[in-house]
Amino acid sequence: WTTLGQYGEWMFNLVRTSSEGKPQTGISFLLIDMKSPGVSVRPIKLLDGDCEVNDVFFDNVEVPAENLIGEENKGWTYAKHLLSHERTNIADVNRAKRELERLKRIARAEGVYDDLRFRDQIALLEVDIVALEMLVLRVLSAEKSGRNALDIAGLLKIKGSEIQQRYTELMMLAAGPYSLPYIHEAMDAGWQGDQAAAAGLQGFPGGDVANATLAPTYFNYRKTTIYGGSNEVQRNIVAQTVLG
Image (tube, one colour):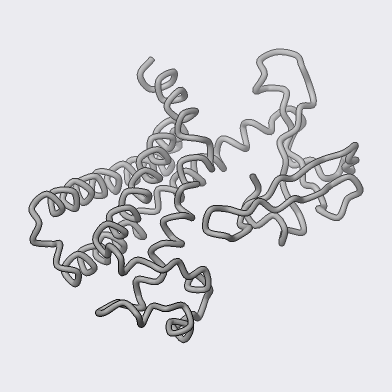
């Protein structure tokens, strides 16, 4: 599940180089040229129709010894730092705050903001985003003080990805039929709605071309709870390392 791997020229890989001691101590960090013999990439088409992620296969791939990063068998030590940063980035608080405001605008435009039950869902989402922001600040503080923030970062990944799915779902509910039809091209950079007529958006009375991205975004964000370490795995890590 290598994101945009079809465009990559190099990748890093965690490989087993020793079976002695704890499993984590026998992993090394290697850089691999994607043009190496035996490396093959198979794009995976997602629900939104895009090939954003890929299977990467290794068939007797040989890597020069000078491509080792750091010390042999210490790769997991390096990877833990990368994972804490990755999972902090996955939380993506800034995007969540921006999309929350967009959700409110859509709800007002479509007349559902006055529905108290729907507004309760928006309020619950906003509370969780504020809590997520505070947790991100805790992780950054721990990182600055030299403490291992990996365990807390797992919580960021869980909550951040779930929040992303929630606001895409609420936008779809708020826009109702105006979130359709599904226009794959709306996700392309620079798309300004020129294809709206061809896609049939103008056939929706009061339909907003800006809503054309809602359906593809909703489909795309089904993957967020899987990448970066699935949320099921993250919950196991939290249970073992944080809750004891």
